[in-house]
Each structure stands twice: as structure tokens, then as C-alpha cells.
Length: 358
Image 1: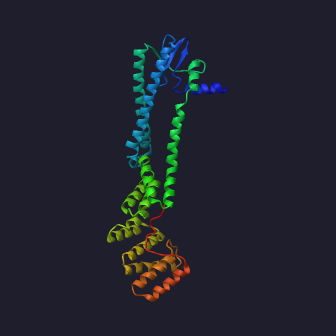
Image 2 (image 1 turned 90 degrees about the vertical axis):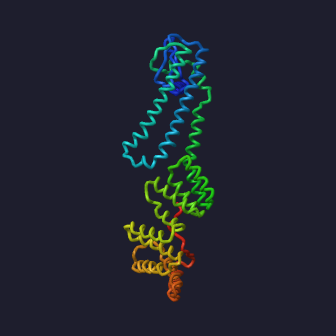
Image 3 (image 1 turned 45 degrees about the horizontal axis):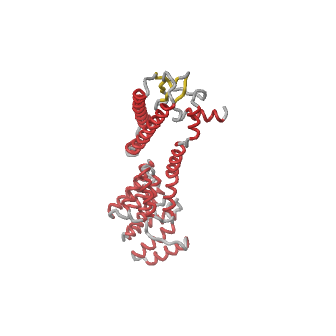
């Protein structure tokens, strides 16, 4: 097949190929291109110009309806019901996501094609319904030449699709860079816009949650981390949620949250990490004796050469603070010296380490 025949084969499968001549008879394409309408004569050029214009209108209407149906299906059904859909058995999920939209699209094709048939019957004349089977030998040269010289709408459609894809693929990275640059207001605004179009991205919810946390919007941050958990189908952000809650939960309720999270953990190393955070929280709330008890337990864990998930220099320094505030000045000096030997340049506070930058 030479290049010209290859181009003609592309033309045959495009909506620009909407008629051909079969033994001196014009065969028109339906909106459903598998269907053809054969007339007993070759239709005059003036009539074909009118038919082509009407055919373009019908195909444009059909494409708009199909596009609108897909968008509505995605935004009114798939996205709002996403969390329920992913819990369905695979077979049921496949049927829901494939069969329903295919039936909708097929019914749209039938309806628009029916209207086009009525137009042909009323304004062109009666026809014989046949299969629409053009080939490179029976197409009209004039129609093919017009196709070659006409700017292809598909180019513009592809350009729009490419822009949409680039936005979908690159915007999460832009939001991540905004968070890394500490432009938290911009990150929140960018994530707000993105989540309107793609409301099922866990990464974007996590970035927005962290930005809101840095802006002091703690309850909103916890809600976004919850969405990130839901849409990632995991509990990966549970620790972040726990950390954010320390900034707005009542004290007694927060202690219960810490105890519940510790009880949920099977691994001792994970329990110790949360215990260290609980001790820091107690220090922030001036519960020095309670914090000191936890720090003592964690220091003993470190001394026994057990695996730890906490920074031992930080535990020593914080225990020194707790000792100082409970009247043990000598113990405070000892712990502070140990901490400085471990990390002389480190600075410490009692802020949570549970909230991590995604």
C-alpha cells in the first residue's frame, strides 16, 4: 500500500467519508457508520452539498451528546460513588463501569441516527438500507481531495486532550513544589482547583492537608488526611491524623487517642514511637510527671540496646527538661549533657513529629 492509499484508508474510517458511489448509485453513511442508505441514482452535487452540511450537524450533535454523557457519568456517578464502587466485587464493578455507559452511548447513537434517517426520507427521498462499505476504489475523488485540504478537527481535539492530560499529570507535582517552597496558600488554592476536576487523588489531598496543617487549619487538615486514606484505600495517613489532632482535640480525648493508637500497634517499635509523641504532648500540656515516666521507659529501651523508632538524643534532652521541671536539677544536667554529646547542633521542641510532609 502506497502513501496515497494509506491516506485514503484513514479517510474511509473518518466522518468525512459519508458517501460513496456503487454502480452509479449514491450510498450515504448513517450517523451509525455501519448503516448505509442507498439511492437508485447518483445524487447531484448541489444535493450532496446540502446533505454533507446536515450530516456534519448531526455528527456534531452526536459527539457533543456523547461527550456530555461521559462527563456527566464521571462527575455525577463515578466520582461521587467512587468509594462505594471500589468495594464492589470486580465483576460487578466492571459491569457498572462498562456496560451502563456503553448502553447509554449506544442509545444515543440510535436516537441521533433515527433523526438523520427521518431527514433523509423527508428531504432527499426513499432509500434502501444497506451496510456502509466504502473502499479506496469507490470513494468520490472530490470528497477525498476536500478531506485532504480541510483542517482536521481531530488535531484540535487531540490538543485539548493533551492539555487535559498534562494538567492531570503535572499539577500534583506543581502542588508538591509549592508545599516544598512553603507557599502553603498557593498550594491549597491549586489543590482546591485540581480536586474539583479530579476529586479522587489521594496524593493531592495529602499535600493539601499538610499545607492546611502549616496554615493552622487543623480540623480541615485532618479531614483531608482522612480523604487521602479513603482514596488510597489504606491507613497510611493515620499517624498524620493523630498528629494534627494534638493541636485541637481536648486533652483527655487526645490522651485516649494516643492510647488507642498504641493499643492498635502490634510491633513494639511502633508503640514506642507513639509513646515518645505522647510524652511530648504531655510536656506541652505541663503534665511533667506523666511525661517523665514515659521518657524513663524509652531511655531504658535504648539502654537495653533494643531497636527504637525514636531519636535517643531527643528523648534524653526532653527527659532532662522534664527532670528540671520536676525539681531534679542534677538529672536534668546529666541528660542534657548526654543529648549534646549525641548531637551538639540539634535543637529540640515538643512539637509533633507525626505529621510528615507527603
